[in-house]
Length: 298
Image 1 (cartoon, helix red, strand yellow):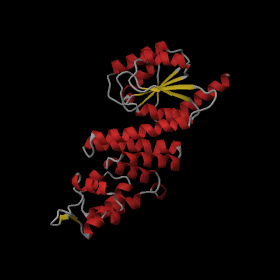
Image 2 (tube, helix red, strand yellow):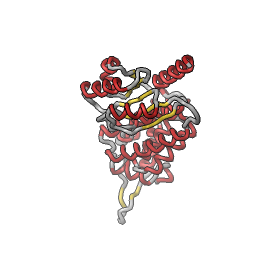
Image 3 (cartoon, helix red, strand yellow):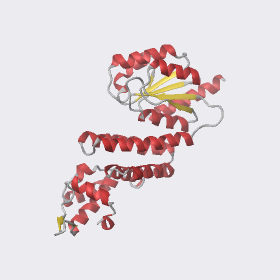
Image 4 (cartoon, one colour):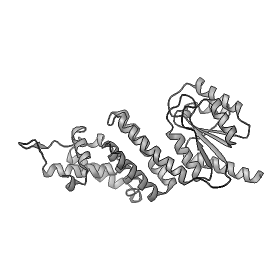
């Protein structure tokens, strides 16, 4: 069955047990016995997941419904998008669902090489993070799946920052998360973007108080402190940390802040002295602008 469908045995078992995609009969020795209808349905599911559909949403559809969905997708999807990031995302999600850390890492590393740094981050990393989060919230995967994916992605992003490291003089950017924010993926992604833009990146991990961030910025002579805020937090706590950090930093050191939870407090963050950035494109533009202004003043 694995050979006929192109799915690994791990994925076949997961789709059967967890999602009820097929219900093979059992022989006298309890061996699974599949028929041609099972083969067709699994092949359709493979194509749909490669197109970006979550297995938990399509596994229990009938073969006719799967065919209709596939036809609808073919009519809507642009040809240029069917073979790039979508295919890599589907392969990554399949490996996540199979709890195959080695394959997750291999898919991500292959995608970096094929897509390049910018496209990898924008078209694969960010959408896949959202998809994994959605699957977790719906109960299609468990926290262990998400942690396994995050650990693999962190390794790849750290490798990218090292590979993109600038030699010689370069402006310094610190990436971290403020106190109480323990999820550092956004900070790592920001660091990768900054490294590609020619900045020297010093990643400090997660959950740092404002005083410690300010001390690090002074010691490293940082031009920018980039913060990621993804977990829900009170405005009082977050704005208080940003206010302390602004007071401790020189006026010419910029505080950049992004992340889905930061957007809820963007007006207060700006008043506290930070620059709120809604997306990675805005981060790139801000870093380029800072470099231009630095060269002009120099």
